[in-house]
Image 1 (spheres, helix red, strand yellow):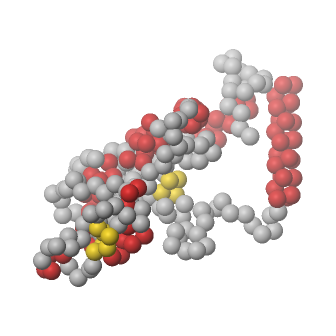
Image 2 (cartoon, one colour; image 1 turned 45 degrees about the horizontal axis):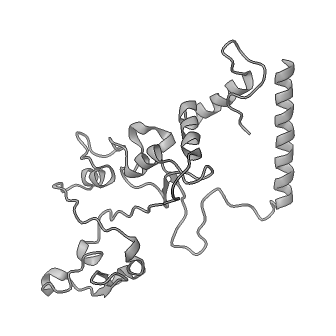
Image 3 (cartoon, rainbow, N blue to C red; image 1 turned 90 degrees about the vertical axis):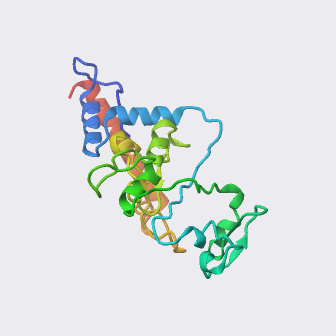
Length: 236
């Protein structure tokens, strides 16, 4: 419903009052007009494949022996009490509690080459999320863009109606966009992804809000939009 740089009565710079106000609404959300137009341009480009990547970070807690590198042939004092299970890749084993991921191991890439020399979660998390150590202060926003934010900027979404970077259920520490801006920040689903009733927050419909009522609202909104456009043309 927002027509950016559309037709209508204009100022001397060629932008109508309606479009000027519409662009101002973007400012309230933290997005600039340039960011929105860039996002639309990226979304409109032809892609060779609608590839999506899920980035799983183990943010403290389980060790590699309890997850993706159980070392079943190591002495008991090193490998721990958990058993190893086969995956759908010959010769690759995961911990017994990674059974669901073991079924799709051929579609996973386990990164074992990252290490850090910090005893603190924050700078080490910053490294895994961005590829850079955090310098100076601890805590707060990340100093460099996260992997997801970089993908959102340079690749864009698979579909114009979908966000390029999604965090389930919320963004992890140091997972923000930093200097890339809010246009590259993650969309956070909220909710509990482990629940059978999981749904993205604020996108579900109320039981009392039927398809007919939604259609009527959409039709009314289109009529009001057309009336505003006519008022612009008439200069009123």
